[in-house]
Amino acid sequence: MSGRALAAGAIVLAAALAYGATIDNYFIQDDFGVVWLLAQKPAGYFPTWFVTSWMDNIWGFTPDEVRPFVAVTYQAAALLGPATPWPNHAINIAFHAGTALLVWGTALHAARVSLVAATVAALVFVVLPNQAETVAWITGRVDSMPALFYVAAVLAWIRWRRTGTRGAYVWSIVWCFVALFSKQNTIILVPALVLYDWLVERRPPGLAPRHWAAYLPHTVLTVAYLALRYVLFGEVARESQLTAARPGIFLNDAGDHLMRVVFGAEIPSNVALWGLAIAVILGGVGWAATRARPVPGDRWWWLRPAIYFGPVWIGLCLAPTLMSTYASPRHAYLASAGWAILAGIAFEAIWRRQTMRARVCATAATAIVLAVYVMQVQALVAEWDERALVARRAVVDLQREALAAAPGTLIVAGVPAGSFEFSMPFAVRPPFADAGVSRRARIIFHSSLSCCRASLWEPETRETLRAWLEDPARPTVVGLYWDPHTGRLSRVRESDDPSLRTLVRLLAATGSGPALDGSIARVIAEVVAPHPVGDR
Image (cartoon, rainbow, N blue to C red; front, side):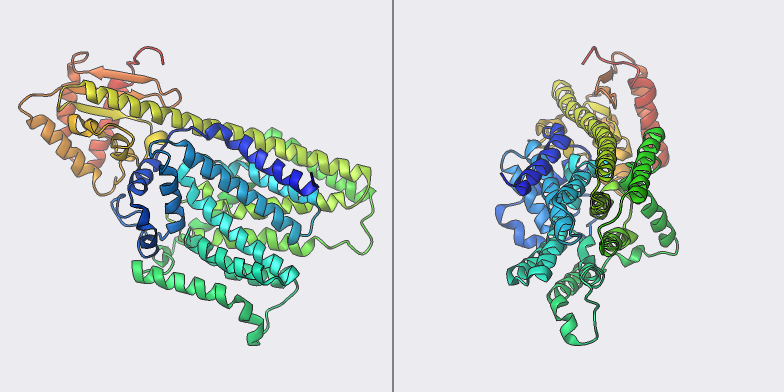
């Protein structure tokens, strides 16, 4: 077996080992709504997603998101059962491994590092703690998919520049199209290609049309995509987000993204461990620099690719977050590819000094960095496992309680937001729960669990309370709460605590929406949570 095949196998294996534990994790948070919507779309719906939002208006508004290629993956996963989570997780892991292989290829062809250094870059990308949300959370696919096709477009362009192969150029255009229709953050591809040619290939753009002709197809695709967004949503790139305060927020978020990519958190929690790692790395680099001689005539080989994959790549990939409505670690998934390739370049810079000391330093520093990242990503994956466990138990328990209760029973559900944020009412509908759940029981919950907290949660909650109060059968009330770490159920029935009915009646009289929300949270925390039901 060739060295390249072994390296590729090691990269794929690393991705599988890092995230294999998530393969059967249950749906959490937005997953319920996304799967509920897309799994029921007919097989021939794919072309429609090119001219409409992929999410309809299930969140209480219509998102300005044209993502047909992401949407169709949910349809494919649903073929094995829409309520079966493992196909979605397998797709996520496959996309992560695929992007890592593309990072590997980009390091080989653009940075021109050795096979070992390129493999280091890919392994760093695989185990970066920043990637956990993107890979472990099914909905995180909205960032891994565009990243994969974006890097594929860049790598095809690089191969075209290096070999002149027309097929590589055509594939770069194809992947550009797929990337754009996976997520709007890939509109930065054209400047990324121009700057690559300038900085790495030393092809500065001139004023003559022939200098710009190669970029024309990618440019036309991007402009057409932005024009489509304007026709559909009245905005090109969420420019309405550009308030006076937004640049300051963006700079703060960008700093947080960089800290997460490099250290695994905005503020490293394991300061001592990272301090040791950084000391060893700097000491090793310094030792190699003072003790070994560089290859003659090759002293500055690393500078141009380091500038491109450092400030240029990372800066470009973070630029679209200027228009984001919130900050999330997955928004730096594409940017982190630049950091990973930088790590490969640093490894190569030491390795090329061709002394045993330098290579021992490079190997030791890489091993320490990878070990620190692996420990952090394992802890983060364990957190996602925990959230999924709680979500699965909540769905099972809610269904059991609802189907066993008398018709019209009011259930006050306290599912942790880490597992159920934005999930209601989808989590108690088919395919996740029996259709009888929502028909037989009335369910209220705090606003963080609602798909439409800003628009529908308060009126729907008040209507549910009103219907329960006016029901002539005087149906009972049950309070349910799940421990956010173990999923252990706590339950209080009206027969256990008669005051529960009085407290719920008072909810209906609560004046404002925030007051109602707070009152529901207090009932769950003070009345329901202290009464666990046996051992789970």
